[in-house]
Image (tube, rainbow, N blue to C red):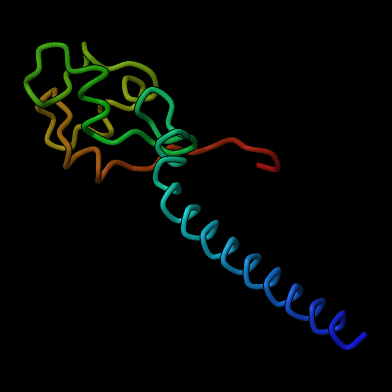
Length: 111
């Protein structure tokens, strides 16, 4: 009977050791796959729920590839707020102007 108890104890320890090692491996795998999951949450190069970066806007809209956005090139909310964003009134939007642009008002629930 004593051998049975010892065998059971050794088996339980071995099982616990394997379970802990498996959890550590899974945690390591989760940390490594996090950037891939974030990249997978992008849609058309954009982060879901956030504004596009300047380089993303250039990729999508800068037709003449001059590194700035003319009013004729932009669409959506940018065209509606072009004059507010174009701080130096040169008819182009630059990265600095977009970074300093006033944030759009959101009309969500309860507003």
